[in-house]
Every structure is written in structure tokens, then in C-alpha cells.
Length: 123
Image (cartoon, rainbow, N blue to C red; front, side):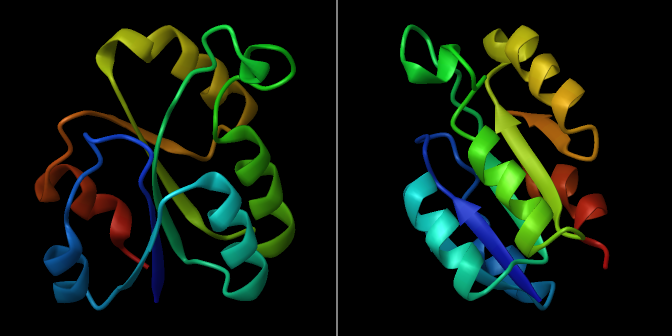
């Protein structure tokens, strides 16, 4: 089973050894562009990604955040993938908009610990 860790925040949960103990192969990606490229090559079973709202940049127009394009791409390449989005409490109102567009995602507030993420990693 493959898990993408898409690291776009210093708060991203560092749970590599936990993922391995759960039988998951973690693929660490440092940008959404790299994640989309990898998605085409090797689709994931799980994704843990950081939410970044587009304050005053191109995200704030058509897209809500850094995740919109990637989440749309999942529908084509990995439609059964489970997605966990990590976010800062102050961004809750923006995360709600993302949840409205993608109701199957799970959202967790930083800091995200093993105990919080564990229930969502069941296959």
C-alpha cells in the first residue's frame, strides 16, 4: 500500500516509522506539482497533505487551496484513495469550502499524531 506525504508546511506530521509499522510505503513529495507527476506514475492508496489557502494568489480565484487540482486528478488516477488533509485551526473556514467540494476527504487540525491518523489508514 502506498501513502503520499505531501509536505508543504513545517507542521506536516512526521510519521514515517508509524506508516512503515502499518505496512505502508511512504512516498514523500515536497510540492503539488511533484505529487501530480507521481500520481500518474504510481497512484496512492492514501494521501496525507497540508492545506494551504491561497491568500491573495491564484488559489483564491478559481481554486480554494493548493489541493484542488490534485484532488480533481485523484478522481482520474486513484478514485478509491483516502485523503487526509492537515490544516491550521485559523484556516477552518477555508477548509470547509474544500470539504464541500470534496466530501470524501478527512480533515485533521495540527498537530496530527499517530492516534488521530490511525483510524483513517484502515484498508
